[in-house]
Image (tube, rainbow over all chains, first blue to last red; front, side):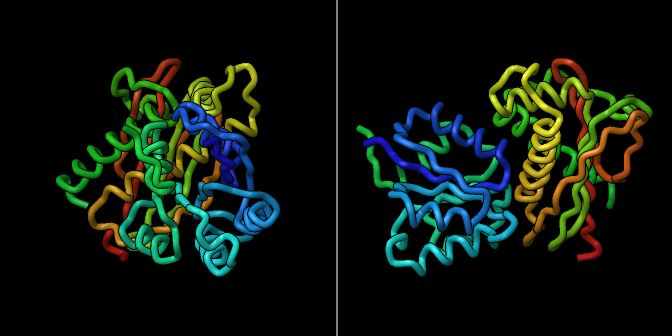
Length: 128
Length: 154
């Protein structure tokens, strides 16, 4: 099944890198959506059928914590899988994001294999 | 900080920086380099302050040619297509990632918030962060990183 993926990061360079890593991972993507902060991401989620969200935490306007909190408070997006992509892999931060409803966590630096494994895990994809 | 802590921090910084360079920038480390040799030279520098438990500062400086090559590697485009704005953005990302990776690997870090990286292009570089510094030889020049962690002020 080809996915519709939403990438949320305030850095255009990082969004471009993530797209490239997704491509290199071999994951079939039908369409990429992008947002520079949580507020833009909520608009994208309201307007498009998104299969999975890859989000940064530190962003202007609305950060990743508030974004995930609002996603989980909103019926239609409550169960959309969210993977956090961050440099911060302290236990404190991972716990906070998991409590808010993030289903996956990827620490930068990461490569195609780690991204694929995490996406497969949160989407419940099993390989023979 | 005592010598033992400095040595541990240096090893961690070296390992995290090498991992970031190879995984995200497709830039293999060729050798270690002498960080002092870049003083007074034209460099692209990036600095950020982090707050938390503990707080501190992080600094990166590199040859302009290496900054361009890193941006090209990160963006997956030819070096001739890289703009100055993209170079600055990617240097900021490198600073953010390497610092975050090192702090996350330090057992004594409870939490941290990274500030926005400031990019400068001094013609005569002078380090502004005093801490544990490590330098790398990459294709086209050198890159050095410096981490100061204020354990005592936490």
